[in-house]
Length: 323
Image (cartoon, rainbow, N blue to C red):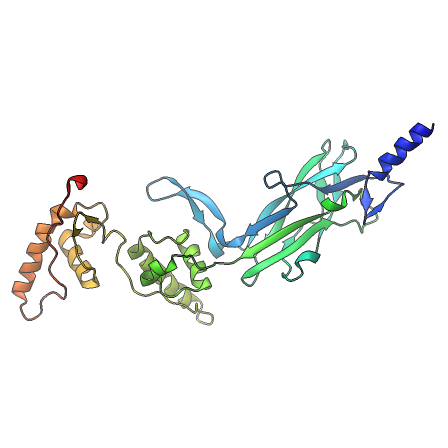
């Protein structure tokens, strides 16, 4: 008899705990959070700034399309487990938020719950979803999610204390990319709100290799459209006029085909080769004689008002490696 009493006492000692106190009259199964199967921890880090969906680029290849500020809320999964027995019926429970004592310096993140959740029948593991709300201000936030046992009709008690609070870290920051300066001609001075607008409108992260000539025009148009629709709260930044495409300075051998960029030269090139041929795929070597001829012809006709840019450079020397 003493043997069975000892085993029973040991089972209760290792069983469910509530508020750190061992319960010797436990009648309910215990519910607790389960470790994230990918991260193997009780912490979820979520960054509103760079959430993405998979789409296709202009060539039809899969790519990440970043959502930027276009999302105001998102759903995450929270993993659960039971210390006890699986039931043959669904059982309801409630969740609530609590501050994280170790992260008191961070403002509270906002989480939205359903009125009640269900731990499904015949399971020892389950998953539920909660909604994270985008903070009103840029920054980093934290909050704990825990079970609400205040209702006397609760069907569960608390499980292991170390699994009683699920930590959620929320960020909404657009920090300056290390190589932003390489795009300043097209973007201007950095600001966090400007980068957020950039990501939201273009669906891409910053890269010095982007097609600045195209993107700069899109950003200026969208900014003007936004400010026109929100005259009482316009954006406090601007983009410089920059229409030089990133392929303009591509070279073979000794130098570029088109030479130094200017708006006037760009317009002239388009007038000669056509908008459809003003691309990175154009065989510029074949167009250069036509451009030089048109340049000379224009200046001969307008000796008092020649074109406001230098002649096109001679064809680059092509090395054996470039052939």
